[in-house]
Length: 342
Ligand SMILES: [Zn+2]
Ligand SMILES: [Zn+2]
Image 1 (cartoon, rainbow, N blue to C red):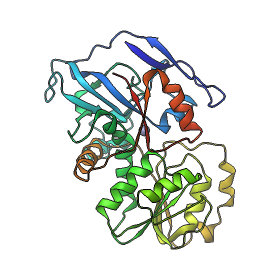
Image 2 (image 1 turned 60 degrees about the vertical axis):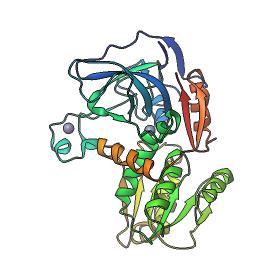
Image 3 (image 1 turned 45 degrees about the vertical axis):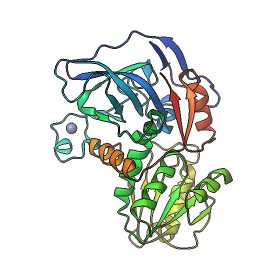
């Protein structure tokens, strides 16, 4: 099978082709696994974190990609609930131990044995992949394969971020950054909380215009003061400046939810501008979003079909994965990038 693999860590954009197109044997599913023939795979900022070493795969080479839609080709003998030909999706959560306190309490995203698709096990930048059947999801028929892919990470993690923001209808919500996840968050919030006003902070005018098209009440640059106080802010950027600047816009008791698996070091010194009375005093909180649970993915897919959410997609061939990653790195983003594999 064709696969785009990561052989060694690299920095973009200095390295333009971190992934290499190779021929690999088709993997064989274990007893509790399914083999998927991959149709589409979303391209996520987390791939950049893996390639550049902020959350490096524990072994290389690795097939990246954790927003995978495909069809069941074969399965292990203990699999039930899937039949050959069924459409199924795989998200960032590849497996968890199932027996620790976190797994038993429904926070398997925090499990110490948490394994990530495309980092700890081969993912969807390939024609085939295996996954434990218990960690694969049926995809609602409302979505095409390409539309479903970004829902599996950007959408599901966006859903978890909204949950962690404790948003209530009628409040003001801020979004810092406006890429794949944020645009899905905006669509979800507009549906579930019609009286929430959304304030979007983004670097490029293109992103700000896109946010206004989708119904943002106000857009501005990262450092700007919002015209109204914000009850919560969800940050989907890789940088630190938006974190500090978002805190300034929070109302007393407000919460900043940081939806990023790792932050880049490039502007870390911006944190020194953190001024306690301006940014944290008055019971302001900062909370990170770690991974996703299966129930987040399932609940979000249902909600997305009900709304219905139609993510904005840019498609690339599997062989063009490096170009998609490079464009993501240089923030040429409108909606979500998806690889068309088969
Ligand atoms: Zn992702
Ligand atoms: Zn566990």
